[in-house]
Structure formats: C-alpha cells, structure tokens
Image 1 (cartoon, rainbow, N blue to C red):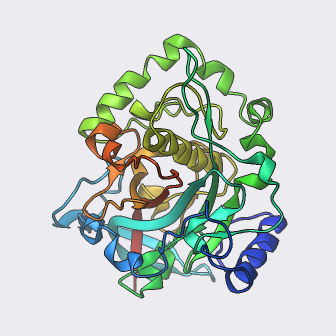
Image 2: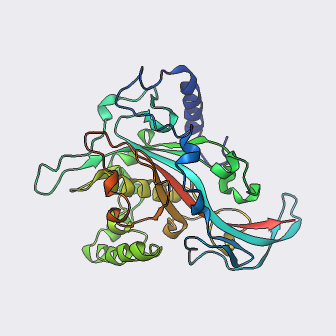
Image 3: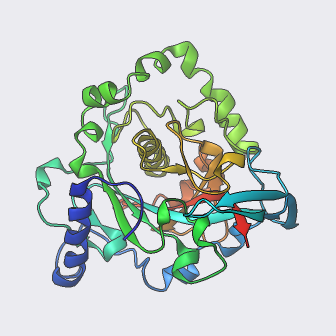
Length: 344
C-alpha cells in the first residue's frame, strides 16, 4: 500500500477496488459505457514517453539533455539528510521528471478505465456526469468524476530510483482518491467553505492575470504565483467537477485534472518534491506548485512522444484527441519533477 496520507474510508475503498479487480466482470460483460484503457497491460510500456524523464540534473549540472528544468528546482551540488535514527548522511543532488500518478476522469460514477473498464459497486448511476451540448448562449456545464491512482512507474519496473525519492512512499499501483465520495466535488457551496480564497480570486481583475499564465505555459512553464489559474484551460476555483461554458472535452478534463491536483495539495494528500527543502523528503504545500507537474494523455489517444505543462493550449497538443462519437473518459499520466538527495 502507498504511504500517502489517506482517510480510513479511502483505505477501505482500496480494498473494495482490489476485490473488484478479481470479482467483477470485464467491460464486455459489465458496462458498455466504461472503456478499458489497458494501461496495466502493454500501454504501460508503449504509451509512456520514456525520453520525457530528461533532462537529468546531477550535483547541480544537467547531465542528459531533453526538456526543461523547473526554475524552482534545486541547483545545489551536495546535500545532507538524516536517517530514521537521526544520523546525518551526506550525498549529492539528483533531479528528474518521474511518472507519479494517474488521473482518470469519467462520466459514469464508479467507472474505472484504469482498472480494466470495471464499474466499482455502490455508486448511484443518477449522479452520472456529461460533456454538455452548449445549447444555450452562455454554454452549459460539463461534469466528470475523477479517480487518482499512485503510478510510480520507475519504482514498479525497478528502474533507477531511490526509496527516499518516492515522496509519500508510493512504490506500487494504488488507489488514492475517489471524487464520488467527496461532496465538495459536486457542490460549489461546500467547496467554497473548504477553500474560501475562491471569493478573492473570483474578481474579474484577478482573473485577467490568467492571460499571463496562459502565455507562460505556452512558451515555457506556468507561473506558480498565479495559483488560481490553469493557463488557457481556465480558472482553478472552485474545486468542483463542473466545467462551465463551451469547451472541448480535452480542455475541460485537463482543467478538472488540475483542480483535482490542487484540491489534494490543499488537503495534504499531495507533495511538493521540488526545491532545496524537498531534497530529503516531500514537503506538504497547500498551494499547487504548477511548474512541478507535467501531464500526458494515456487514453484514449496516448501522448507517447511528449508531455505538456499545466495550462498549455490544447491546440498545441490535444484538440485532435477529441474523438467524435466516442465517450470522452480520458486518463492522464501526471509527471512530477523530483529533487532528491542520493546519500551513501
């Protein structure tokens, strides 16, 4: 099981999921509207952009070229971390992009493409979401549920990775969060009481700053200080599963995936793994460090040759992934820049 902080009911739900994997029928026998992403099959190898782990920074120097290093990543050469007994150990710093999480966004409650297209038991089908049809002048709302899974691919495949570099202790595939059990995901009023700063960032003048975030994400990386923005995808607040107004499914689900990450940071369920203070272990950060993350679609059309920062326009990477006539229940792979102290 993962070491992420989870409420007892989430641990119980993880047992339900594990049991369901063996007892529930597959998609062809269970639910035609819940697709099988086959992520735990060959897609785990073929649909991941393996070159996206680069660049690798060792002792403050970039040793392998590739994409970009976040500006807030550590540039230290040496480091010092203590073990469980408080004994300090010297080491050198290492940083890279690591696949860390899976975020699946689904319309049918309990549907899980990542678990082979099964429908988890006990969810009311009346709470089904939808993509909206934009029949009104101001557009109507689209709604998705989300599920978060630990997906530390490099640890699962026993590739080069230190146990101390796995923030939260994630070492295998594991269920972390189910939005169907979270009333704040369905009700904006409850979400407001959980995140009252939404009232401040709702001001039109404040929202206008998101234009700068969209431009930054298109050319480089998003602006962490504009925590209420998701670039060209829209505003992060409130942390609910509804995307209002006309929007493509790829853009809407990208926004909701970012809201899910932001909400988990506010609840202490996600970690900052970037920066000098995160070298020995992950740091709890209530505001999402957007530049720490990159996303790549794994289903239905995988980004096997790249990934993209939060807020980058979908016209640059994803509008062609809207498949007409097929239900949009996408699965996103979350990449996390990880700074780590390799001790001896």
